[in-house]
Figure (spheres, rainbow, N blue to C red):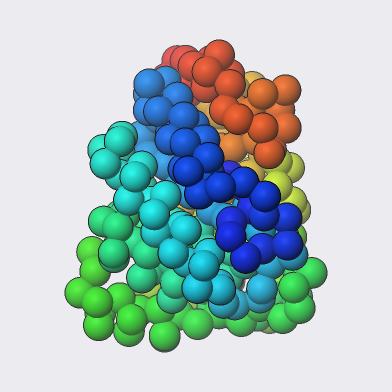
Length: 249
């Protein structure tokens, strides 16, 4: 995960786009050189987030960063448009050549600090069809920083995300960024949806990656790779390499 600083138009924006791109490229190159399989960018610094729509400046900025990372690293790339703008993420991916998007609430409804987050799977899939985009949808089940307002059973919710929302892969995370998830939840989702990849989406570290990979198909990691384990800090090359070493044992 490449956490971008505040983008143009957001309350905490300070840096130039050149500096934002340069930092993203440094993180991307560090992760590529360590041996990671894929990258994801997200507008992590744009707090407070809109519930379901990015402003045009943020959409443009994400597209610029995505394009530069694609050309620099040649790794599969994903886009997460926070808080829950799947349509903008899909458009950015289609325009930049990114291979997948992460959608926090793809089906159902959740209560979060942004208010009500509503799944728009029907719109997202029809937009993908309209764009003729070869872009996979990685969808969270009971996403972090939110409380589900519909189906409380995570296995049943996962079946809806997969079979009614037609997500290409599912993500299970902990309660917040950097916090571990319940591996029993991961196993239940894996058992309920055996025909789709299941990923862990938070709290992954060098110490836990082997146990996590025994329960699912992959993991998204961010905070534990950063300097001093601080989410907003740059990627630490030593931590990144140590993680890959642990994952491949």
